[in-house]
Structures are given as structure tokens and as C-alpha cells.
Length: 139
Image (tube, rainbow, N blue to C red; front, side, top):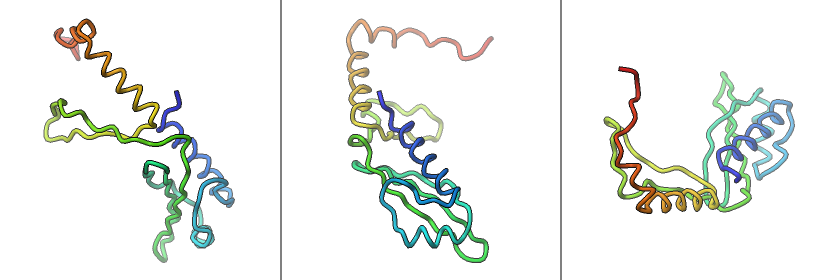
């Protein structure tokens, strides 16, 4: 199964390697004028990654100490729709002052995770969750 995080990281690093060599991204949509301005500033740094249902947007930062940094955004079309899997309503937060959130997944990956959850709801499979948790450290 193709995993979104691995696919996005592979694409991002491939583009980054091309940018380090002074080449254009090689794939995806980007503003050519921004690329020219960015390359005049020097070497890129890997920036943030953003997800949309139909795109992965990879950002590359070109810093310039004498002016402001230029951010080149490359929009890549994924092989399938991207979904955000929210934390189910029944999840209880047990992290001290933390938050429970969701994550982005490909649709096939999300459906597989939901199917796994549904299997865990079957009576026999679910009994394992009632057993005492194993120790996390040696006593």
C-alpha cells in the first residue's frame, strides 16, 4: 500500500535535490518568476508541506540575509485523493495538557485504517483491549 507520508517525502526530496543543483523542480506546478528570484538568493532549504484533497504543496525556502527569504511553493498532484482522518469521537485524551488531533492519509490508506478499526470492534478482537496494559518499564 502506498503511504502518503512516504510518497510526499520522496517527491519533496527529489525536488529539493534538483533545486540544490540549480535545476527547476522537474514536476508539479510552481511560479517560474518566483523560482528565478529564489535561485538568485542561493541554496534552498526544505520548508513546510501542506495537504489539500487534490494536492501536496511542498515549500522550499531560499534565505537571503540582506533581504527577506523567498518561498517557492511546488504543487504536486497525488496519485489519489487525500483524506484527513479525524480522531474518532470516542477517543479520550490522556496526554497531560495535550491535544488529540487527526492526520492526513491517502484515501486507500484511510479506508484500510477504518477497516482495521472496524475489525477491532468485533467482540473477540475487542476483548484484548480490556486486558491490563503491559508494563512500560522494569520495576
